[in-house]
Length: 262
Image (tube, rainbow, N blue to C red; front, side, top):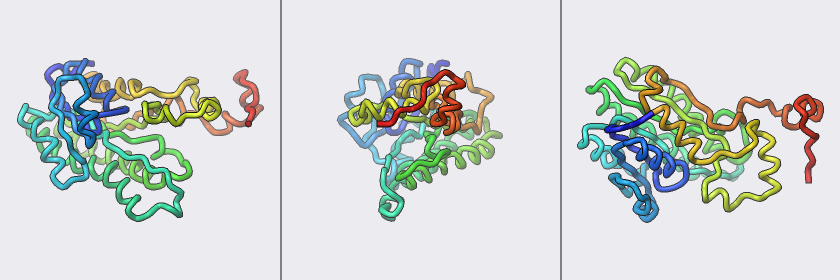
């Protein structure tokens, strides 16, 4: 799993999962083009890369972000990681909030992928990794806009994989569960963590590095015969039925005591 000499574009690269992916790709030998709206955080990333301050929703974002990669003979890999999380009840979700979630999480991935495929196709190779989410697979209150955008990523990934496969271009998605980034860690409460962990069979919350390793795999030649998949990086969250978490009888089968709610 190395990316030596491969030109890799990562959006949303300044913090959290994107930052972890950038660092892991750098360690794997990638030639990096990184984009993010936060110029200060991007500049603080201590790796050799082309760093672009860019909003992926801007009209010229695909051409600006991909130009350095094309000039370097790529892109070989595109990671559509830029996103925005909205937590708003359905009845209080505005049209503007809905549109923003779709624009950042889904529309930008489509536009960047479309232009990247145009550059990859003549060379007969390439890999695209789209950042989806378990929220596109499972219901949860107050994330309708975000979940719809991530559900669109799931569908778009499959369609793109079928259309781009004949040109040697692989397209896959990652669906992280709860990943503890620095920003999110500051909001966690011990009681909430203890109960949340019950939903994760591996018994811990995710780290950005967990997602970065999965992104490296899908981007690398190690996944050369894998396309059109959505890979959950969720500690087993989506594999476990809700009854296994809350039913005292089922919990007893695996030697777990009944849940105690505060």
